[in-house]
Amino acid sequence: MAGGSAIRGSRVGAGPMGEAERGEAAPRIHMSFWCANQHESRPSFASDAEIPDEWDCPRCGLPAGTDKDNPPDAPKIEPYKTHLAYVKERRSDKDGAAILQEALDRLS
Image 1 (cartoon, rainbow, N blue to C red):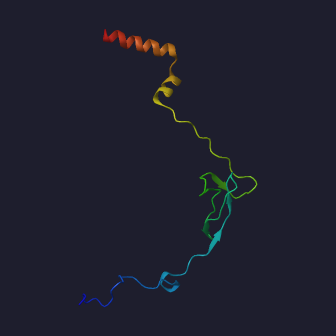
Image 2 (image 1 turned 45 degrees about the vertical axis):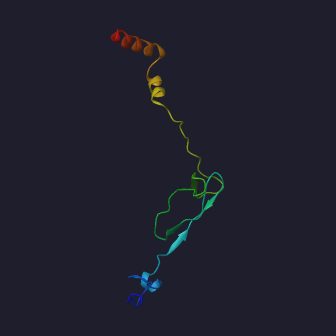
Image 3 (image 1 turned 45 degrees about the horizontal axis):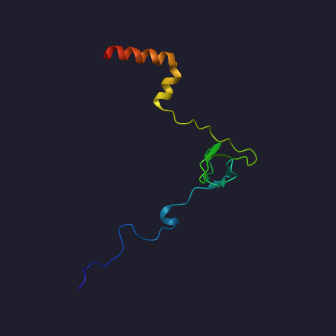
């Protein structure tokens, strides 16, 4: 004989989730946003919410705007710079050679 649970297979809070139990949904509006690749996304917003000027495209990640003919430009992506690249921006080769010679002289 199995355990004596009369409500087997259900859990606390289980049951139909209709509008009566959840409450009424807030009024929504759908806005169209287009990215530079002409992907359209239609997120929904509460009718009284402030609509953003830009939205990230879920397909390609580019910024999308509400004007289909003039989507926002893709952001400029700076290439990764190493520590050495930043040092070379601050110092010339002549300065680097002088610092190296100074360090070598200290070791001798």
